[in-house]
Length: 62
Image (cartoon, rainbow, N blue to C red; front, side, top):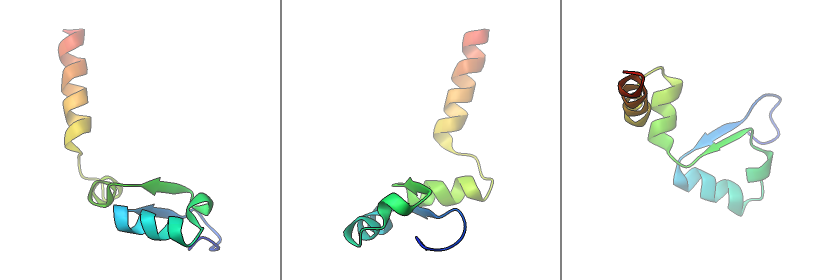
């Protein structure tokens, strides 16, 4: 993946650890330690922390 022509994205603690171990982590376009959260985001699902932040912002605006 690190040498692929394109934007490389990895997610999940084990994947990140493996990329670091094999010396390719710095060649990744995006590294996310939350594999499940990244999959949800990329598939268009809402993320609880983002929704909570939006609701807090709306309450603040009043």
